[in-house]
Image 1 (cartoon, rainbow, N blue to C red):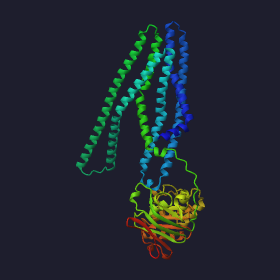
Image 2: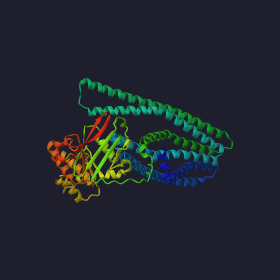
Image 3: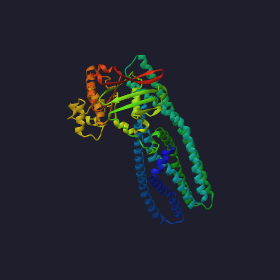
Length: 553
């Protein structure tokens, strides 16, 4: 959080300085009214009626400049908040999309989006309203004190500063005492909303008694919410009453002291009255600003891990490898560095992948086949042990190289409510139409090769199960990879479509290295069993092993 605030201060120092300058000018303009009233009152008391015209001119100039200064301050702070909002969204997006595979799978996308939106809203309010208002309070108190010292005396300035400090501490103190009540109101309101939402979703009645009980519970929640709100209103009234007594007592004492002094002019009383009124009006907003600052702190802290300035990656030299014709992937007591890594048995063994072969990784569901492949592509880092590809440690190979050259077709069909062109284009966004059409024909989707703008529907709802699989494979192929990993490509498909996909995989294996992750018997799907190169993953004595099978898979 501290690093991020320093990042804002250093990156936007010019805009912050401009906001401070405009706020200072606005404060001087606004608080000069008390000095103008003193000048007018003293002049009229001495019989100088011509001073009225001068006051009208000065007052008109002040009224002209104040809206301009206020507008300029709003413009600069709005532009700054818009830039910072874009930075937050960009940083948070990069953070979320750069999560490793285990963290990405565990994330709650709705909660992450909510966190980001709350942080953006809080910072927008903080910069557009709270920052300006808090600056205004500080600068106007300072300006009022300076004017009092110049036109009345040092004692007057000191009294006004003392009053501002005492009254500010009082406002913050009563706000702090009300925060627990406001928190309970928010909790009660959330319970009411959640209960009502749940009731709307599950609208069907279970039984008359259950319906009566739910209505009763809803009534209790509403009663508790109303009770908390009434309590807050009562506390607010008491605080307002105490504030009124404090303000009136200090105002009367201060003005009475100067009234008793024989040398005090009427202008001094008018100026002090105006100064006190301006201070009280500004400081009264301090409680609201204090709550906004606390809220912004909480909201920004919730996304702080994604906003911290990224450390510059050291310029390291990565080892280059050639995987065009095959890979030998060796695991030595490998265990990924995930939050749940203590529950994952270490993996040892080797996967040999050859171009022109039907490379199969077989094993029971949940044993960790997908996990070791994520790690092979650099999506998961090693917690214990290591992985080598063609005798080169994965940690010394550029992650981008691995991701680009090892296309991964997930067992989860990830298809967007977009066109065929856009969906397949995620494999290679610079691919030309002819290249996309050729790839579609290659995977048996020729009917779309001349209709690339066809919208596939939400989650590919306008495509059949087989077409979804083929589109996913086409996306991987378009990536122009050397290894195509197909994770459970037959899941959820009937026998006819499974055989069609198996024939497609056989054809593709002649052009690129293909690794098929599956738990079915490959002999049931692939006709040419002589081309099957099978690796079996199994668990024994608390460890996972990879074993090459010579004859049967």
